[in-house]
Length: 153
Length: 342
Image 1 (tube, rainbow over the protein chains, first blue to last red):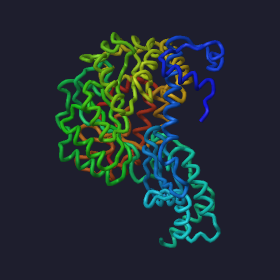
Image 2 (cartoon, rainbow over the protein chains, first blue to last red):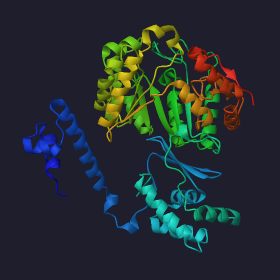
Image 3 (tube, rainbow over the protein chains, first blue to last red):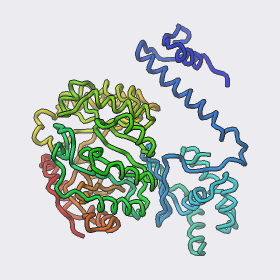
């Protein structure tokens, strides 16, 4: 992946330990921050880039879609309730309440995993999805869980 | 699957509402519909190696309750929490790491996949302890800092050592354990809040928590030494607003700016999905009220959870909160527990 000027600056600084920006680079950093503050800023950005690269390099990322299996993210806990269920993201301490449909989808993922298509197929069979509403809801819901970082592959 | 359930599922599906709510914190999750708490804050012992000026629990050396839960009682409660699939616990104190069965309790939580947060003064976080916590999949360790410098830290944390706390946090960072920092404002440390937030970030924290220091516990005796002025609080929260923006996306800066009274009035209408277990097994509705709703030495967690939901509706609770509006120092009575029988 090509790096822009800003990313190049961050990488160079990270590797050299030299946290000085030239005029053009300073403009790209887009903040008038100096010395220790600049160093802290660049360090955090570099950590972010390294983290992203590590994420991009995960073996799961190179798998074909049909080989991917979904699971709840590390800090996400699910509990079934009378009304459906709750997902609790303990890292951010956020709680999401789920309807019975949402709860059924999460239970299916937790029980047997698989990719989104496989999970939806199993749900369609289990719940006799005549009008296709479960398929639609489940697909949208799985996407939403992924977007919120509650579900990972 | 039974037909009735299928019908309900399809009915729910047809509403198009699968994820019913946007995220809220457990404290804002209505407890009424839940079969068990989502979060249990457990003060495992009142014993502590420090004797902090502001300690709301009046903890300190030799301050363990005489009737703290036995090992058998402790693990009976833990087993019930696991069976009820309580997803999240915190161990605090006192100092939870001086509890005689601390490591066994952490191991139990790990084995039963209950996520755990440890709230500690950070003085026992050796390299080995930090690695062990990581290996036991602890979610996070919250360390009380309460000072942006050695001078202020050591002033508020009697017997405490700023460098030891920092060393403990460094060990957590090296081990890869999630770090949270807690900060209690006083008249002699509010000016350091900006540098304290910076320090927390440098030390590797992903969250920073603060609020207003409460008039209870040890603070009742030391209030004249502690309480920040209105002007100090104004600057304090202004800095925190600024730091929240500055660290957005890198470290979350949480702070409760509103006073206790507003919080409690809100809580009466919206009881949290969490309760607090005291070292002797009594269960409190919330730290800032004296009311208990059960005793885990003789009541089951399920019974206590039912009591908890009813207790929040009791007139005594509302009356106490309204009395606080005219007598703010009522918080000094929080340790005179009032049991609300079901």
